[in-house]
Amino acid sequence: MTAATLTGNERLRAAMVAANVTIEGLADHLGIDPKSVDRWLNTDRTPHARNAEAAAKYLRADAYHLWPRLGERHRSAPTAQDEVVACYPMRSTVPYGLWRSTVAGAATVIDLAVANLLFLADAVWDLPTLLAEKASAGVRVRIVTPEDPAGPVTGLGDVFPSLLTVPDLRLSTHPGLRADVMRVDDDLLVTTPVDGLTPALAPVLHLRRLGPAPMTGGYLATLDHLFATATPTRPVAHLRAVAA
Image 1: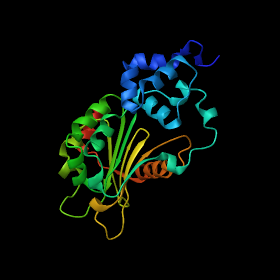
Image 2: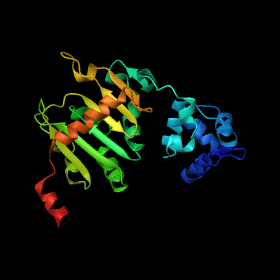
Image 3: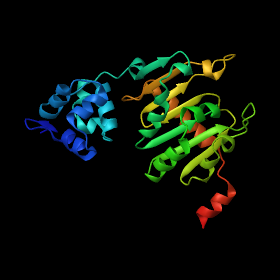
């Protein structure tokens, strides 16, 4: 017997109850008809991969746990194009609230590889407060910035000085950082650098990891490499306080 039987999908029902999400609420978040969610609950209907992944993220659950047949339905591996949620010609065309809402929706991981700190200060004005709340809730938060930033801004402490005192954040610098990558759970917002073009005019990709991550996998691997080879920047005074 699967999770979706004649009595409906009890795993999905339990996840919605635990998250205090109604049929209408889930449908509104996904931008679909509530009848579709009702069918997921009361039949063995398996949603399309993108809706399944988005619903699972909203419910803080695993899509393949909620719908065990998901892998069977989508036996062919997703393509790189399937992971592209949106593509913006320049940073100013990205919906302003998207940056902050992405961080605010984090459930497990926040990775910020940011070469342009002033942009981040404008996009997520209350970033220190958000990250402190997420870190205290158990979200892994890592931030890497350029080792030798260009321009008048000299480092993270100049733009977000309060971040240096937030516990449980992994702060570091790296000499090879050029792009801006925000990774939150399975979503990535990537500003792609172009030689001779100011970062504000560079294209931005909104990506969402699916299955074996045909496109996002490279970015995720690069992020792990950056953090593995970066130099920690946590102030000595704070380290002593933690050790004590």
